[in-house]
Length: 334
Image 1: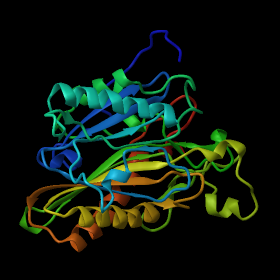
Image 2 (image 1 turned 30 degrees about the vertical axis):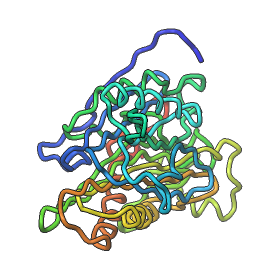
Image 3 (image 1 turned 30 degrees about the horizontal axis):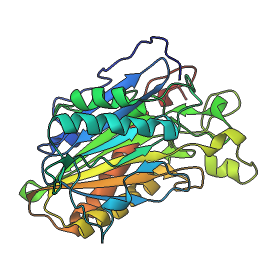
Image 4 (image 1 turned 90 degrees about the vertical axis):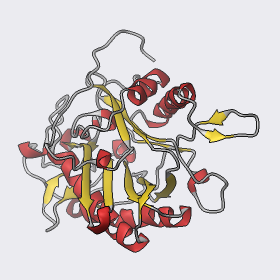
């Protein structure tokens, strides 16, 4: 890894007067580490005590850590943090920094010896073809992101795990559009809240609810979107297309079991498929974590249905709020 100094940035790309992001759920805090020069970063979601975790992984090229323990029939029900990070498999190292921070705070799974072991599942995306390929989130960067976590409205666009995100890469990076980080929230009756936070780095296009492409593969001249599905009819993927991924978190303040929380993660993938075309390819590692903080009564079917809604909204917001970076143009410059 290169050891020369570089400029990093923790900043607000867009803010909201009303919190309509993941931190609208009481007790959840989010922090970022962003390196705009290397075009990479990570995002840490810190969970309140006794938050139940689940996961559903559907892409063909995942990079994950501690996801098996979230599945049914495993001992641990609760998670302390989730890490979303760039840097491909190298970026998983940042999870150790989050663990270190939580250990200092004496947060973790209680063991018989009295030691608390922090539970920090993680997922990575591939952003090594933009910026510097030898620089990726480190243990210290994960620690920094965790320590900076707040309950303020979350920055979106080119921040955290969204810094190096790009979309629409069937023909390579030369025709890609800038991806990013997005978040959305819906508040239902009885104080029930369902939220999502996603880093969007898909091989396919991001589409609006009417199917119109809002970010994706560009034409030869770099203007307008040609449509990845249309291009796939006659074009083989570029060799550089194999590393992508949409990763994210859906969360609710509902009281749900571990089985139900995993079901919510599964249902949230419907939202990914509504907003990304094609989704869940062999070139994507699409992974969704689910969190249930247990503060209000909630039905798993309702939570799952709206988790799909906020997932689609967060994915679309991620590309609409992203800015051009290192010759990869933002969606609004189509």
